[in-house]
Length: 226
Ligand code: 6PG
Image 1 (cartoon, rainbow, N blue to C red):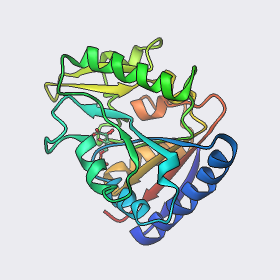
Image 2 (image 1 turned 90 degrees about the horizontal axis):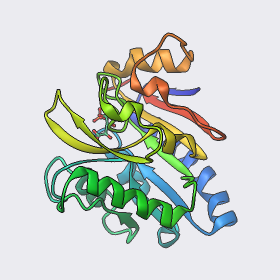
Image 3 (image 1 turned 60 degrees about the vertical axis):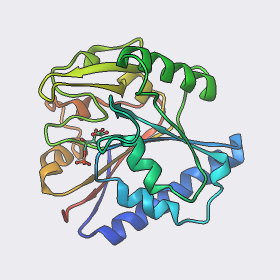
Image 4 (image 1 turned 180 degrees about the vertical axis):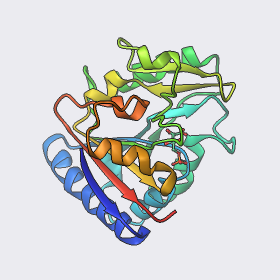
């Protein structure tokens, strides 16, 4: 994996904006669209706000959530809410997970259907952004949870015992199809994982270490400053 490491946030964000333009331009040229799956949590919000200030063809861009907490879209923990707030004013389409109806299983099935409908089969995102949790999880693929073993589904429901909550998550199968994958991370707590990923450590067993790409690139954009 290619590691881009920065000691402070400005150059970290600048590099990702440049990368976004490098990937987005050809996608728009070749396919007329730029499909991006976004990570949740708190780290990426500064990137999303920075991207939202770009002069960018947002009408040809479609954003998806790589994972979602099973809460209503206005809930403080909702990834959709964080993304919607960050991209306010761009008019960009954000494909929301309908987490206010039914179960995570029904929601995951509906979201996968939407992704297949929009991106074809297999669905290849032009870019998938991922974070890494303090336990090495990525998307909502938490250690010792069922979705880690899911090979057929592209979006899976996943109960996370340690949090006592349901989520829906991209599976490793969906991630493999991506044209490009970025880990977007910040702060010393992610350091051990970043080192293991950058060295392609074969002994690394945390969920983020199991992310593979069939034909795309995997890059890490890490800011050491918390
Ligand atoms: C989520 C995320 C998750 C996140 C990590 C890191 O819904 O929580 O998608 O995978 O990326 O937990 O979160 P931070 O960036 O806030 O540390």
